[in-house]
Length: 180
Image 1 (cartoon, helix red, strand yellow):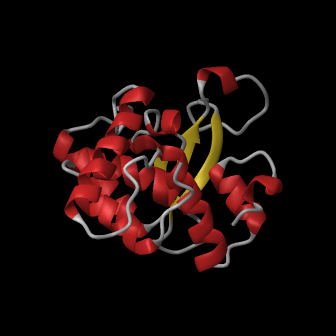
Image 2 (cartoon, helix red, strand yellow):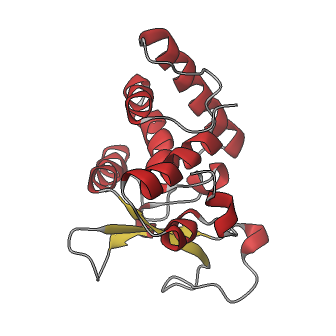
C-alpha cells in the first residue's frame, strides 16, 4: 500500500486526471485532507472565506449521518459540521470554477457519486498516471494515501503545528500523525 506521495508524484497524479471532477477528487483528498465519504458531501455552500487570514478559504466538512449526533459546530442553517479545513487558493478557485461550469446549486455536492466511485476515480487516475510518467507512481494509490500526503506536506514541508493538522484532517489523535 502506498504511504504518501512526494510532490512530483502527486503533481503527476493530478495532471493525469482525465476529467476536471477526477482532478478535484484527487485534490480534495491530497490538499484538503478529506476522507472518501467526505468528498461526496461537500458542496459550494461549504466553501467560505476565512475571517482571520486574508485570501484564505475554509471548507466546512459536513458531518456524516453517523456523526450528526452530539455537540459539533453547525452551519447557519443548522447542518452539523465535523470540522473545517483550509483550502489552498488554487483548489478553492478550481472548486468555484467547477461549480459554475457544471451549474451546481449551493447544495449540490461537487462530486455527486458514491464513496466507492471516489475510490475508483483515484485508482483509475493512478493507473493512468503510472502509464504516462516515469515517476515512481504506484498504481494502488488510494484516497487514504492522499490524506497521508496532505498530512506529510503540512507537517514536514510547511511546518504546520501537529494539532492544527490533526484538526484539519479530522484525525482522532496526534499519535496518528507520528509517522510523518
